[in-house]
Every structure is written in C-alpha cells, then in structure tokens.
Length: 425
Image (cartoon, rainbow, N blue to C red):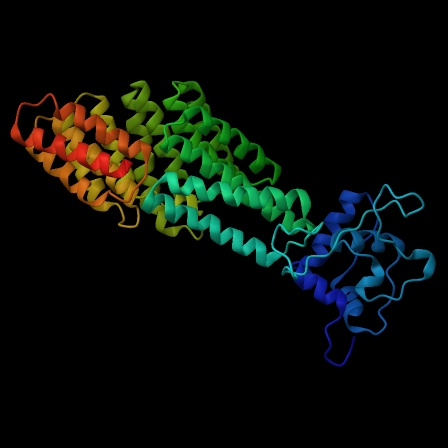
C-alpha cells in the first residue's frame, strides 16, 4: 500500500464520501451508537492507509469499521489474525457468525441497474446523484408542463427508490440520502395533490413526507412540507391545521437558523391563513413581515430549492388576495398585474394561473373586455400545461363570462371551450 498505490481502506473511505477528518467524526458517532468504547485519530487513519502492512485495529475499532463500511476487516487490507476474521453469512445460517455484513458502497454500480435482477445490487453515490438530478427535474416539469406529467414521473422515481431501500446494499450515508430524496418526493406528491384538486391525497402525502423528513432529521425539509400542508388544509376547511402548520414551520425555521427567504415563504403562508379566515389585520401584519424578509433575502447564502420561487411577485399576489377577500377587486388589479409582470418565464404554470386570476378579478371589477383580452393571452400560451387547478380556474372564468351579454364575452367563452376540448383529445 505504498509507492503511490491507493490502499483498500482509503478507497472505501473515499467511495463513502469521507475525508480523513470527517471519517474520524463518523467513526466517533458510530461507536457511540453501538455503545463501544473506541476512538481513532486522523494520524491513525493515515497510518492505516499508508503503512504496509497497516497496524491491525483493536477489536472495538474492528467492530466499528466493519459496521461503517459493511465488509470484513480482512477486505479492508488488514492482515487479521484467524480468530478475529469475520465471516460474511446470513444471520439465520446455523454455525455461521451471527453478524450480517453488506457489500460496500463503491460509488458506482457494477454490471447492474439500481434495482437489478440479482439479489442485493449495490447503490452508490453516483446513483444518488442521478436520482437527485431526476428529482430536481420534477420542479422544471411541474413549472413548465404542469403537475400531471410531473406526477407520472414522480411515481417511477418513487418505485425505484423504495425498491432500492428494500432490496439493495448501501452505506448508511447513501441510505440517508435515499430516504431524504424519498421525503422530498412525498412533498412533491403533496403539491400535486393540491394542484390536481385531490386534497385528501395531498394531505396523505404530506403526512408521509413529514414522517420521512423527521426520520432523517431535516427541519427545513419539514418546513417545505408544512408550507404545502397550509394550502391543502385551507382547501380542506381545516384552518386550525393550517394555522398550526404555520406556527410549527416558524419554530423549525428559527431553530434551524433558516435564512430570510424561508421565513418569507412562512410569512406568505401566514397571510394565506389570515386572509382565508377574514382576519385582514393579521394578514397585513404577515405581509409586512414578508416585505421585510424580502428586503433582506439577497443576504441569504443558501436557499433551498423549494423556497426559490418566493419573491416580490408572490407578495403582490398575496396582497391582491387580501383586497379580493375585502371585496375590493379594483384595488387588487394593480397588484395582480405586478405579479404577472414579475413572475419568471420559467414558471409557466404559475404564470398562466396568475393571468387567469387577473382575468377573473378584472371581470369582477367590471372590466369585461380587458378580462377577455387577458384570458385570450392565457389561451394562446397554456396549451402544453396539464394542471387541473389551472383548468378549473379557466372554467370558472368561462362560467362568469357566460353571464355577460357581450360579443367579447361570448367569443371568449367559445375560445375557452375549443381550447379545453383540444387539450382533452
């Protein structure tokens, strides 16, 4: 293991994603979890990786090393005395050593897919990176094409992860990454339930996501689920649940030291709850907090992907909601117009939804011709978006337009019906 060759222990350590320093920390944590009085230093790790043959770890260190890497000590490059050799065998085998060991994480799959046909395929960091990229792709699919195609792809990713967690072998770090991705995926499904008007299914997915996020001890991931739960709870007429979700999200974000953008999202959800219940004073206070957080958001060093949608246009949209709830649609119009102008072009689904809301409010404000013009603009661009919530809002506008006795309204209604029929075929 000298002369520039990489030792087997060093290869295992690097494949598991550890530096020598972080490996010492991981070793200490694992020893504590096992209840074993064992420790190592960076200097000792260097000796193990550089010397040939390396000094043999004492029995307590051996147990921890074999637990971390999932292979017998002899396969790490050590010359192990015969009486301390660990055999790899099923726990139930009679006569075998009563310890199950798993194949180490090599960082890549060798001759097998993530869920292979042979027993116990290996899942490594490369597979985690691929699944993470696919999860990130769901954001783009949902924002550009809607929740329907995103839900289909999410189902395939979820099956792959759950099969891997149940049948594959992997390091504890890779396992945690897989469970974290699964928790995020449940959070996506919760949102798809909201967008698809399947509120009960969305709430069920929220509960799964919250439990999974708690098990990986990720408070900000819990916050991301709670902000979706607020929207679902409002739709389910469970305002007490929505208010509790806001309160707990604030607690988690504060405890985790979250940045201003995360707190901005929470303030917006608080405004949603207050507006829905008609507590307009509380809604104004929440929006004031949102404005304050937005003004400091550029100092955030790291913003979770789920919170990156938040910005001035969301505050404008929430302010418009407040005026609509107060029965003042004309005051809501300029805020909705600002929200439509401010939303990014990559958020196609939300952009179309905002414009439909603007069209509906213009109609309520007595501006039927302008409302129909806005709706025509939506219909020109929303053909590739499959979102039940967006479609519902378009049909809501159609019902309102049908009560207006004007050529513009009749023509717009017919255009809506043609577009809906076209999307259904």
